Length: 231
Image 1 (spheres, rainbow, N blue to C red):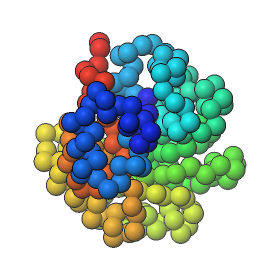
Image 2: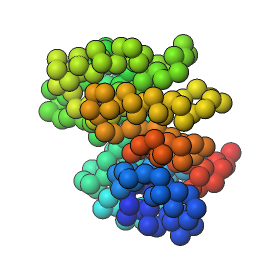
Image 3: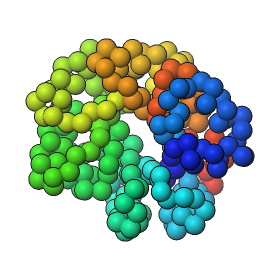
């Protein structure tokens, strides 16, 4: 689950002054989006939408989900009642789930291969709906992670934009665990600038300050705001 925008930030800042002030100080793009991740909120109730919707304004409301199934269960009905709600997918998307994903999501942060790109193109045409996309970059060249290698990014971006006319708005990365994440954030920013993309989906509770210093426009904040997840 994720709430976003400076509107929500004003609510959060009362209890998180240091964190929020650091974000404001470090980023000129903060008015874009601040996210709270689904995995952290799940520990605060079995039905986060119903638990939280009475406490926050829904006029400028964004949510995150890690899977198509999760989004269908928790957000289909609510999304139909709140037209301004935008749903972001942050988990890996399998090509066989692409049609369902396009039906419910407005943003997908994990476009990571050509087959998925072609499926998104196909189903967008069938459903007459465009989603905003982030290309996931395998920034650390890790075999166990999906994503487009840096060396292939230009060609993949051109394929998505020129051949498929996909609405690619930015890049996303997940730096290697226990690494100097700032180095990877800088690399992603430089890569985005080379292809004229302004949005960067990077940074979590452990490294959001480094991410904002390097131009992050989308953050995933769970424990930094809500505390540790309850088991």
